Amino acid sequence: MPLLDGTERLRVLRVSSVHDDDRAREDVYRLAALLSLIIVGPRTTSDTLAGLVRTQPLNIAAEIQWNMMPPRSYADGRVVISAAMEPARSAATSSSAPSTARSFT
Image 1 (tube, rainbow, N blue to C red):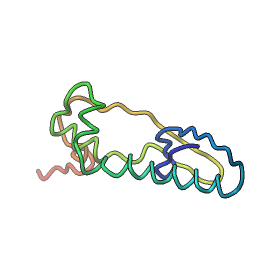
Image 2: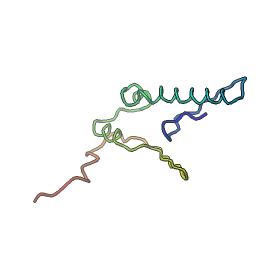
Image 3: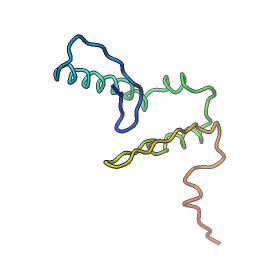
């Protein structure tokens, strides 16, 4: 059973049961949804997960850019697109600077 955050696959859950009926499948589906919420919930409010998965700290500009990135997965009825990204350790400028820069001379 996939653990999903919207369309992003977080992990895969393996469950064994002596029952193979609709109720058991529904219970496994609900368990997977609950575990997904437990995994995803602290992502935006805690630095613990980031500290565990990062090999090096990010500077402030890179941290801001990483948090502004769009979701890594998209799905509709016909296609699923996913991306794997690794944050840059440092960034020289703001990610919005090139799109908003104007010359006033």
